[in-house]
Image (cartoon, rainbow, N blue to C red; front, side, top):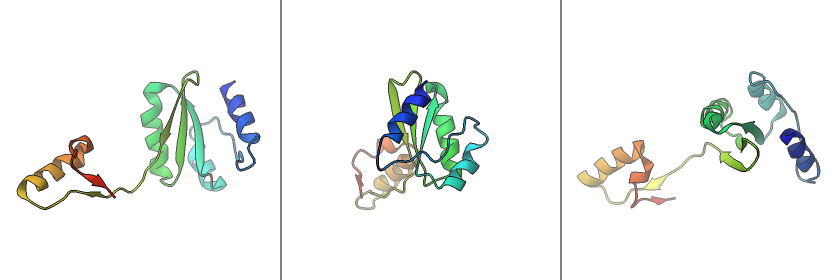
Length: 114
């Protein structure tokens, strides 16, 4: 039912097109490659979202995944994107912070994304 709602919504947009509908998880990567899709709308349950989304993005890094979770009350955008963060002046402390920040980006509280 949610799939039909999404299909009808996309069909009604003049700048969007459904290029394929694949219920099989195994068929998704090849279907994405063949269709040249920019965005995949993925219906899934919350706990599996990150794992499924990351697996798809590893195979198709330019793809954007719009995940509609559960009964359609929540949605998420998953994407791989290059990122460069200015870490400021180099010092021993800044270098240690940068190493920690590579593992936990939230710790780069003083960094500035460019």
